[in-house]
Image 1 (spheres, rainbow, N blue to C red):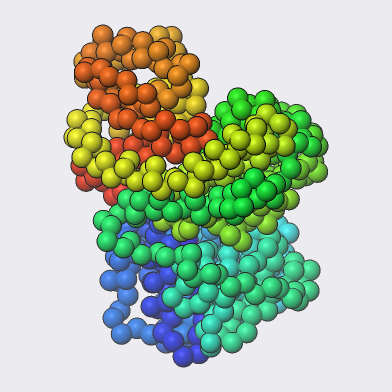
Image 2: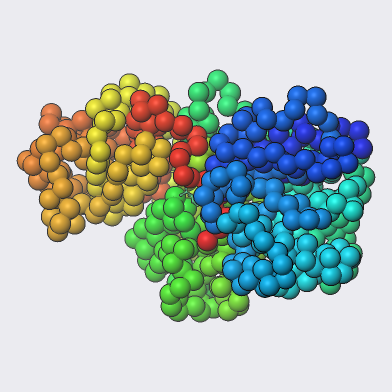
Length: 600
Ligand code: F6R
């Protein structure tokens, strides 16, 4: 989604800070970029459609400035054009904005009646005009910001320059992330502290309805009432935030390979001392039911947890798409723990669902990767996955970290409610401790994945099937393939094929399946035979050395249900990767997608 950087300095040229920051935010996805900076006592605005490097080339080479704001825009209101790109400027005010001003049409009408006119079709230009309207009314920044916050419905992280006040940036926040990085004689605001780590790892986090005046040597943070707030200064641990690609061609491949360590790193604190460490996890026996909420891959991780909670610990668990959750009856009760899963901790739909649960005073738990993110603050209890920075848009190591942490949570619950014996728990802990040995051969099986990719990369439709846990994994497999290869891929419960979808199977249609449950494998295999008879080409991941010359088979070791999802997903991730590679796609930044979806 959109990204913001702003900088003000006594002794540095902020243009390089802004461009470096924007480049570091590119992973979020965007389609235009822009910058506004002080040049010859005037605000100079440059915008460009496409990559940040194009914007960089448009900036006059020797330009220098000590204050400026910059933005990458992912189009929501209005197409990806230069006019719609940020920054927007209305008279005294220049802003960049993340989020959506939901009541912008009503505000636009009010402003039109006050002689404002608009060049773009964005809600941001309306927000900018509204700030100018209040500024001209009060000529007082505190009153202007309060009036703006009172009027606007929706979400915003805004960074603003005011013409009469060119030593300061102003930042305002509601529901979109914004941090203020602190460095010597230079302060930098950004959507994500990782964008500005080259300059600082010390930062303040703004909460909703807070705003700040940021000058080169001072930051004053205030509440909507204008009271000065004493905020905690955070420090980001640099060793967990390696943002380089290393020797890999793509972040996605690097991140897939990092699973050798990220899984164990995530669960180790809870298994290091055997089953005693498991007891440090929250006690779930006080709840009658578990609900899980997430989007995309995080939702798929929730489905794996549902399988384990229900099949292993006999605890009812429902999983919901965050985008639907707010608009349905959720039968909220204090006896139900709702778990929110999110890599970024900033996904707008997940945050909205969480706020709904909190508004009813019901218990919440977060499974989050990015520390100090919005969701991590809002939940009652937060457990962190230790996947490290995930830069590729397609989630891989965050997913396996999520399912591992959730599995360990289920394991501790099973011990507590006595559905899992101590001996069984010790065996599962041992499996986790040997995860690197188990997954390394699968990560290294490049020839197999590449040969499958060569057979499927020109296809238009691919089906993923499975039963039970394998069905949930096939959903993630299909998502990985479609988002980076742009091949239409769908997952189906294997038994459902006959109820409609089988009509789409024709000669050479690839069907990819996993069958790793000895009670269900024979059934999945007969479903595969049915599609084979109709011309499909079958690729099967299985764990019981099943042999069939008419299928291409990837064997995985036999392990418990707690580890199995990790082993099945690795071939799925790498088949997707090599297929997208053969298609020559922009693997780390697939078209139309954003890393963190901060609008509804
Ligand atoms: C897919 C993918 C997305 C995210 C989803 C939720 O590879 O990355 O489906 O899983 O947007 O994002 P988070 O986990 O940040 O809430």
